[in-house]
Image: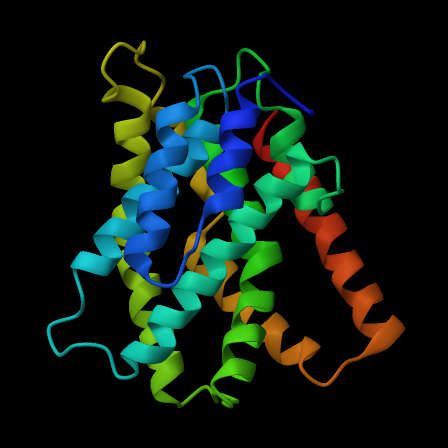
Length: 238
């Protein structure tokens, strides 16, 4: 086991997760939140992910999504990469460098909750999102263009996340009952280093880069991206 004995409970949650809907993903994240102690940095990424997933799911754009089936499937597949990273870390099965940055620092003192939250977002978006896009597109037999309904929905989510994440980070820093307040002034500094819209747009482009690749070339491209993401994750945790 890589961390505390409480990881047994965490492993049971992710092993038993049958995530078919966004509600299933939210329920799994809620269960994870329930077993992670406040001194575990993973708790704060999970809390941020839970909050923004819930808000995006319950606040569609006024005209609705252009391809709701695609967006829902993407959210479910994407969450699955997070749950798999937890499972593999606990099982010592090896996780990408981008996830190692957060997992290795989970119980390090003097790292702010918002740093853990952003390091997790960095790993999940910069490493996992392109792969989730490719899997979703393959399942639905799609190759969305920049003018497609799918890309329009993707950009709408970007806008929702841009509005929601600073509020969620402020809550993590100051609004947790029983937890000491942290410096909200750091939020702007960290989000200047790591921007959710820029990260998601790069993930879309990276998916297009990976789409025609196979074999050794594809793996080398993934490995290079993962190393860069891991370095950025560690810089967010300094």
